Image (cartoon, rainbow, N blue to C red; front, side, top):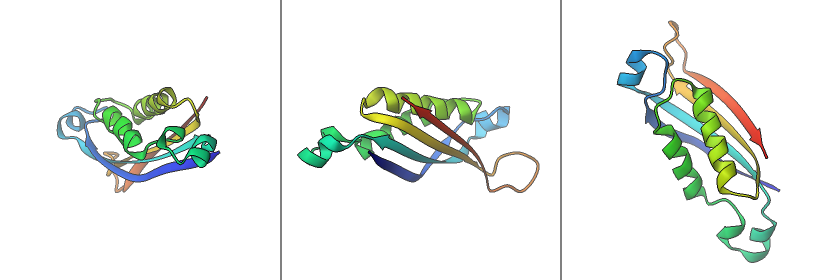
Length: 118
């Protein structure tokens, strides 16, 4: 097994409960860890036996583009999309952060961490 990670992916999106968040948008940061059986890639040296970073990014970007109220909902969609795309993925862990969340105090980022297993 291997862990394939993309760290610090930055997005501008329209996730939030408040109307102004849906209209103005905000900046978000995504970290993803994907546990994958890479024995085939170890032997073949071919991309088919592992997770393609570019395709992983595209899946995350597509889900981030769908407006949602809750980061938990976005995170869950990303996990399910990754598990559905690669049969050799056994676990997906997402950390989705909203920069400067509107909580009435100085806060650099709120973060939801979600993990799904096959």
